[in-house]
Length: 134
Image 1 (spheres, rainbow, N blue to C red):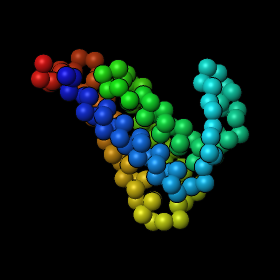
Image 2: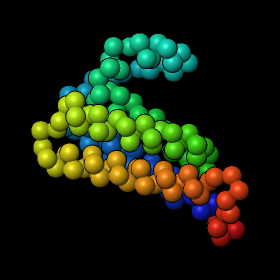
Image 3: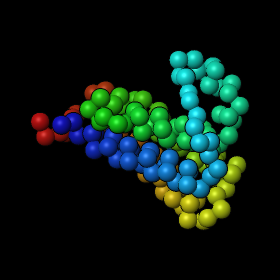
């Protein structure tokens, strides 16, 4: 098993936690269907201007990208993690949560996603040895 798979599994859990924390704290749309075959349509959708919606979309995409660690593409996972690293502070600034505990949870999730993505980037960089127990 490649040594980076536990990182992907942890990122999957963090994406789910991020989604749950945001959905629990903020007024979120009950249902939103995205058609990702046309990114321009998504960017122009006025709902996507809302930092809550942006963060929920990112959390769901990260959760989807990490659902099967064996099939996950590390550079996509890292990219989505970098988006989360930008979106969470934006959410906290534009729509601060009512409970200080929620802000702390979001900061913690952001920090852990950032750390895991940095480690994943180093572990999966071309030319890096694989330290897995094959």
